[in-house]
Image (tube, rainbow, N blue to C red; front, side, top):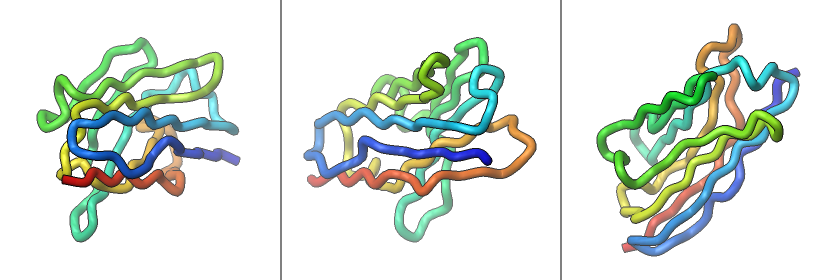
Length: 115
């Protein structure tokens, strides 16, 4: 059974930083491409950043230069370092394997950025 556990969210002021982690189990982590999504209240879930099995990364324009996605195959963990946070980054953040045969999601971690 695949399990995804996101952590590291919290309340931070504008300009602050947070590091999110997503620990996975029950899945061949190393061969998966991974992504972080977020969903703000009243909005659709959006793709924020992704990382391929070979380490290639991509970001939505709104977070480029501020967020960094990384992966640790040994710890089956994908991380999202977020800096210079803005109120519009407030959302629940989720990680997801993007090339897995099943549509699996964790419970997410709440990020709140106060102005």
